[in-house]
Image (cartoon, rainbow, N blue to C red; front, side):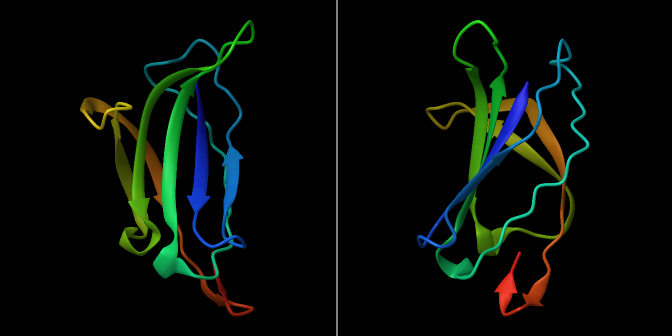
Length: 110
């Protein structure tokens, strides 16, 4: 699988990054990557995590997603519980992330 992380907000804040894919380990994948975003207007930003099953032959398959307002994020280690496309809980499916917010970097929040 791989994880896409997207920021939706004002034009300057809108961004998208993704992890590398982990091959043949859908039950306990480890990405070990850091993704950094610059957010100028956190009050209008939404953060979305999308987990996809990597498929080199065709399109990647959707596994689950979760979206939250940027201002609702809390720092530290967090379990992001995944939802289906229809918003139905896929518990116990989750991704384990570390969130670090640094404010005041050249007037930005990242």
